[in-house]
Length: 424
Image (cartoon, rainbow, N blue to C red):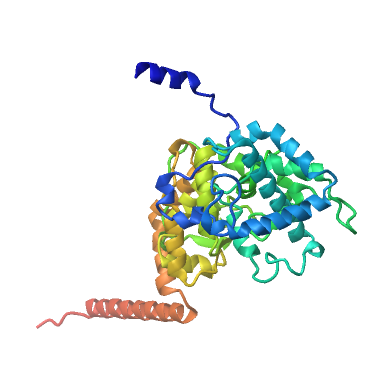
C-alpha cells in the first residue's frame, strides 16, 4: 500500500497557476442551484454533453460555420492554433478536464466560434439571418444571455481574443473593425453597471479580463476615485449598519446619487446618497455568480461587501418602500416583499473580512449619527407631528392653546394673591 501511495505522489502534476474558472462551492449551490446552472447552452467543459443542453449544439455548429466563412484563415489553422494553447486552456480550469485532446480542441473551437458569431450578430444586426432561431423565433437570445455570465459556463477570455484577432473579420460599411472587448461591451450593455464603463478596459487601461463574468465584475468595481476615498477608512470599526427604517427614524434623509458607480454610497449632512439599484429577475443569478467567483479568485471582496451592506440596509418591505419612494431602488419584481426577500437571500453565503470591509467608514458614520439622541427627537417630531402642513398647523394650534391656558392660569394665581385679605 505504501508503494502504491508513493507512486501516486510521484505522478502528481503541478497545479496550474492561471486557473480562473471554478466549480461553485456546494455551500452556495445549495441556496439556489438554478442560479448557477445553464438552462439553454453549455460553454466550456464543466457542463459539456449534458442532455438538456444538446438541442443547442446544432445552433452552435451553424454559428461556427458562419464564423469560419467570415474568417481569413482555415478550419485547420484554427485547430492547430488551439492545440498550441491547449495546456494553457486546460490550466484555466480549477479541475482536471477528462476530455481527450481532440475532443477538447473541438469543444473549444465550437464554443468560441459560436460566441464570437453571436456577439457579432448582436452588435451588427445586418449579419442576422431570417432563419436564425436565436435572434428570431423562438428568440433564444435572452435565455442565452443569462447563461453567459455563469461561473461554470465560461471560456478563458484570451482564447476569444486570439481567435477573434486571427479571424480578422471585416464588417461591411464599418469604418473601424470591432474588437472582442467592444462587442462584449455591446452585448452586456443592457446591464446598468456596464453602461458607461467602456473606459475600464483596453486600450484605455491595462485591465486583464479572465472571462465574461470577470468582465462584469470589473464593470461593477468602484472607481479609483472612490477606492482612494475609502482607503483610509478600511480598518476602522463599524462593520454593521442600521436599516433604512432605523436611519429614517434617526432623521437620515435618502437621496439618489448621480453616480453610476454602485460603490459611490456617501453619508453627508444627514443625507445618505445611494446610486440606483435595479432589481430584476436576473439580479440574483448575476450577483450570486459574481460572489462565487470573487470568493474563489480574488482577495478583495468588493461585491461581497456591497451585498453585505445592502442586506443590512434593506431588511424589510418597509425599507424597500422608503428607497423606492426616493428613487433609489427600481423594483421590477412583483412587489416590495419579493424585493426584500431577494436582497436578504443574496447575503446568504457572503463572507465578510472585517479588517478589509470596504464600507467600514460609512457604517461608523451612520452608527454615530444614530447614537445622537437629538437627531432622534428631531426626526420623531418631524415624522409624527409635522409630516403634513395640516398636522403642523394642528400642533401649532394645540401649543398656542396650551400657552394661553398656562397664561390664564398664571394670571388667575397672581390675581388671587394680589387681592387684600379681609380683616374681621
